[in-house]
Amino acid sequence: MLDVYLALSTMIDEFTNKGSGWVIIGWKRISVQLSNYKPIKGSSYLPLPKYFANKKAIINIKNTDNKCFAYSVAAHLHPVNVHPERPQHYAHAVDNFLGITHPMPCMYVKEHI
Image (tube, rainbow, N blue to C red; front, side, top):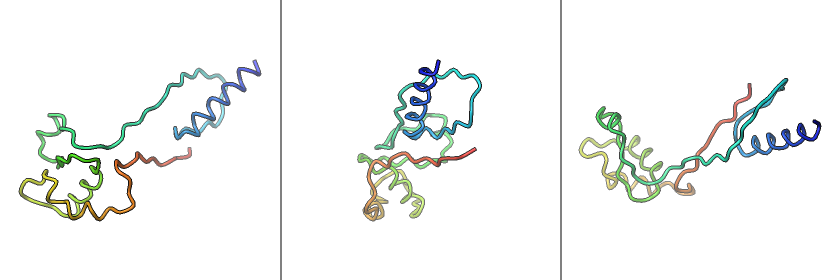
């Protein structure tokens, strides 16, 4: 039984160290199923689902590069009234994102209970 406990503790430690955000306080009985987590990351333009597109409340920049995060920030800082989905409106601002990798990696905030 001790071998199972040590193996399970090691697996949980490895899982949490990879950024799961979990904090184990204690356990009495546990059943765990682990799998590989492949987070999505930003990239170029993807069409919005119809539900969101029909609301006309989201500007979806039609970029062809991996700078979607930079375009979204530029669209907020430099609003355009006519065809705001066109990336050429924001090209000058996107070029100012020096030192930022594209696509932007997913970030998370580790919360402690």
